[in-house]
Every structure is written in C-alpha cells, then in structure tokens.
Image 1 (cartoon, rainbow, N blue to C red):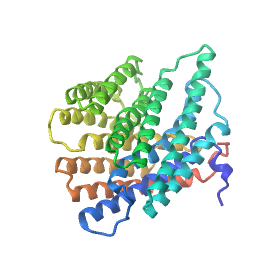
Image 2: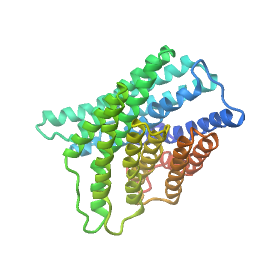
Image 3: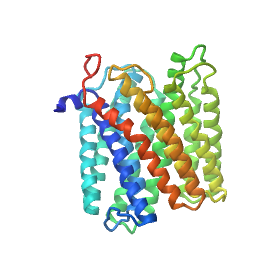
Length: 400
C-alpha cells in the first residue's frame, strides 16, 4: 500500500501523478466524445454545457497546471539559490489538484455542471496557493538584494494570466450563456499562460541542459528574448481578444520569427542524447504553430490547426521531455529517455499531424478521432511507468 507521506515526499510526486492520470483520463473521455459525435458510438452524457465546450478548459486548467506546479515548485527555489520548499508550501497544491480531479470526474460522470464548477473552483484555489508559494520565493530574492531572476518573474506573469483565465472560466460556468467569458478563458489560457510557461522554461533549461551533454556547445539565452517574447504575446493576445486580426497576425509573425531563431541557435551541432533531441524537436513546433496562427489571422482557412500545433505538437512534446527529465533525475535514475518516452514522443508527433490535417479538412471526424486515439495510445504506457515511479521510493535510497 502506498503511504501518503511518500506522495508528499517531494514537490513533484503528487502533482505529476495527478497530471499524468488526468492526461490519459481526459483524452480517453474526449476520444469517446469524438467517436460518439462522428460515428454514433456510445459516449458520456453531459449537463447544460456541451462536452465540446469543456474540452479546452479541462486541458488548460485541470490537466496542465499540476504538471506545471510539480516542476516549478521543485526548480523555482533552485533558480534563485534557495533551499527546497518545505512540505507546508507545496503539499496543498498537489492535494488540491487531486481533489479537483476527483470532483471533476464526478461532475463529468453525473453530467452535473455545478459539481464541475466546484472542481474548477478547487483548481483555482490550488493555483492561487502554488502561485503564492512561487511569489514568496521571488520576493525573498528581492528582499535579500539578489536577482532579479527574470525567468521567475516571467513565470509569475504567466501564472497571473492563468489565474485570470480560471476566473473567466468560472464566470462562464456560473452563466453558460456568457460565451465571451469562455472565449476569454480559452484565449488567455493558451496564448498568455500555457505557451509562455513552456517558452520561459525552455529559455532557462534547454541551453543549460545542452551545454552539459553536447561537446563544444555554446550556451545562448539572452534576457532580451524574454522581453521580445512577452511583447509579441501581448500583441497577439490583444489582437485575439479585441478581434483585430492584423494586430494578432503581427504578434504571431514576431513570435514565429523569434521562436525560429531560438530553435536554430539551440540546435545541437554535435552528438546529443535522445532526451535533448525531444526538447529541441518539440520546441520546433513553436514557430510552426505561430506561423499557422499568423496565416489564420490573415484569412487562410486553417481551422484550429495553429492551436493544436502548439498544444499537441509543442506542449505535448515538451511535457514528455521535461516530465521525463524530472522524473528520472528525482527518482535516482539516469537522465535518459526510456523506451516508453520515445514511443510517447513519436506518437505525439503523429497525433499533432493528424489533428492539423483534421483542422485543415474542416474538422474531419475520422482525422479527429485518429488524432485522439494516437495521443492516447502513445501516452498510456509512459503514464503507467511514471505513475509507478511516483508511487515508489527513490531507487538510490535518498529522500524525496
């Protein structure tokens, strides 16, 4: 039997377990929804809010945040030169998101929007606690006359947007007729929360990791990249929220150029381990996604191809890379990509391509179902392996 103390022995254990389970559970639910819509198979019911409107919020605010916090509550103090957080600082986040996950599944199973609203409220409270814990570390750094660590403040800016998105989602859940609130929640969640966290972490970690494993690698991560990225992001967000397609396109073009530059400069010029290649190749989806977004805002009919190039291709690939790296290192295992990780990464590339084709083909049902099935099949073995690690003591006998 797993002891609760083991799940709370390190900041990443419980949040990573919750996020991993949510990954396959929510994609399994979505696969059944899509199959029911397009092939008349048995599918879960719903409440007043159609399941198709819940897909994006569930992924943005119920699945991704525990993975973010599992990573950030581990690395944030280290970025700023402080000891690891104590259990009182990080445990409520994992416990809160575990409770939110259970309540969300009760809401989905019962088709009860009020229960689902309670789940998202629990998620918001957990995010508030986690963001507060991160903010305390950043403020301590300033009080001590150190820093500032700009990666930390970039993360905190993204978290602030994420909290705003969660608040907008609760407004929609309280009044499902308010479609604008849902649109705001989804757009903020993608453009100003999800992608900025990944981009910031990549800016911090990719050059550092590459310099340690590639002979002769020149580390490149100037601070102006973060400033330029946030400038493009705010331009894109303003354009999408205000319905100014030219403004949004300009922001997307700037971000496509910026992330393409980062991908080229970070590309290994020598032999590199698989764990680095999945980071680099996953990151290469960012300029693709932003370029598609620019074309879409300029009138090219691409459907939701830009969003899914970024969520499945970019974010999905980096989840496999970053979660694997933390899981391996913090369980006393070598920093290498296991076979299930390689399988997961390859499957995500196939799922991203299938979802892009589905979007371009006017949301083709067969392609949508294929993409969801590929994602689920690819990730399930990886999730099972990782879950077993989170439920077991470290291999090297150390604490954590």
